[in-house]
Image (cartoon, rainbow, N blue to C red; front, side, top):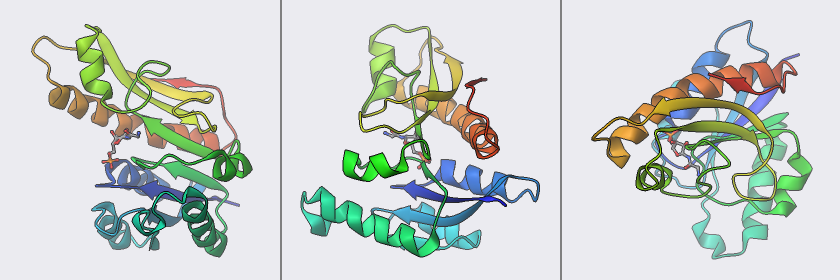
Length: 197
Ligand code: GAR
């Protein structure tokens, strides 16, 4: 039985697209059942619909800081499709312990840094400011602490002379597109040993 996957996005959803494309393989151990965004303008929603994946929007703004109600609304959408796994893919809202704890061990996130370095935002600029020679991305299990949790995979990217945050971000994103599908495929098949690309 394939694992049912819900993918959370906030924007363009390029990582989501790669995950869905990979799951189109009949031999893939997972299948996408929902793409959920916290913004009706998220560009990834139309891409998901084009690929035949059901979509839902839970706009965080009407909840005005009432994270519990926001998360209850998300959980209601999930209850309709009964996913086994959640993949955060450029989802830019922090989820609290009340939401995260019941999904312990079943929620993945991709973060654009070599964790534990550069949790949070502006990861590419921070790597450049630090003078790092390499940067990259990490897929990890989500725990209540931000950008924490056991690492499931990492891909490294050399920093090149003249890199800006944008050029570095673009090269990291290419690696995200390799890493996340590879990790999800393994994870859905029960493999939790980290993958290093
Ligand atoms: C990706 O680089 C992802 O790693 C990052 O947002 C981008 C989303 O791109 N996520 C975070 O910063 C999470 N805090 P996408 O919408 O094209 O997949």
